[in-house]
Length: 99
Image (cartoon, rainbow, N blue to C red; front, side, top):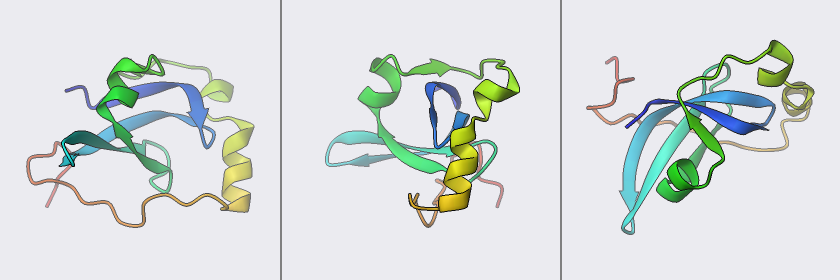
């Protein structure tokens, strides 16, 4: 599974994410995605959303700064209306487990 992803559209103003955990819930594969620039911007995505939706590119696409960090990010940081996942749990076999 690819760990690095670029979103076609910005998510809270950012487009580069890493897959830090994969779980199975009620028979569905769930991925925990975290922004590479701001860990407060994180979300859960299903296999369908990540792999088959056409909204994501495997790997990081080199984008101009104004496309990878948009005004929406600064609006998000100043408003803090949306809430991400409060705690991030990493599986022992995750590439990002450093403990």
